[in-house]
Length: 313
Image 1 (cartoon, rainbow, N blue to C red):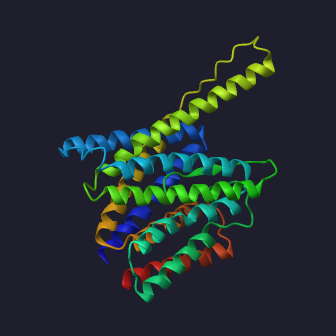
Image 2: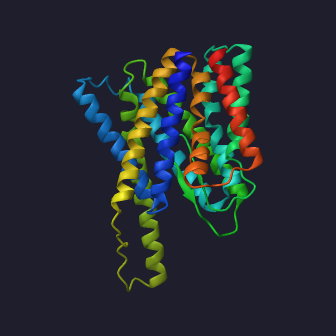
Image 3: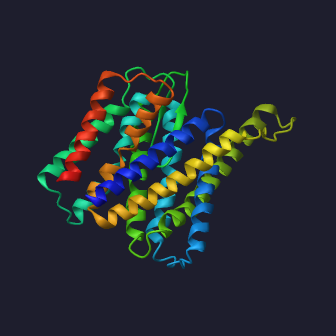
């Protein structure tokens, strides 16, 4: 029961953090918001570790978290690209199944949920997918385990490509959960911070390579006659607050997830943490007055019923 409550707290923190990042992304470039969010989480986490005098467990001990950070960065890139080329109704339900990865790892490791808990897991998965699915896929807010963005794309969607990218994102988001849970055997506070080292490095590398390709492409189109310096725009104060808040909340959520995984089955904790997508949908309805469709409301009810079954089983 304690593990379930902590996992639900993690999903709440992740969902609120996703919403903060999503709202910030509506006012500024998504990549800038993501970088600020990740850096904020890293700085806050490192500061807390210093104040608590928690020594670094060592690179070998944090290897699963470091590898998970690379997966997180790749997942974010795949997810953003999926949102850019596809529609929310295709991308979001697939990405929301990221909790299946820790479930598989847990079952392979010998975890055996009770019959009621297994039924609850199924209800949560179905409920999460239904809650984020929209037949009307116009401008809306979606959420993931680590970051939320606003999808606005008037071009014709390429849903086959988007679905493939969403699968990559779901697997990567699931792997970061497995990575930080594994590294937590040595220290429960270090893994989310360690993961941000490699996620930031990977994101910076991808951004740099993408920037170089963009500059070369524009240079070829312009014949090299014009200045190719990228445009700079200042991030508004409100966006800074949203991005930093998202970073702090995502860090707190990751720590709560670790604490829950140490007190309960990883497979069950991961499923409960996936309710963050339901939190985002609910907040979008309350704060942005987005209409909940019938299947979304049914999904929320199923997900909450499943969560109760897991906690009580």
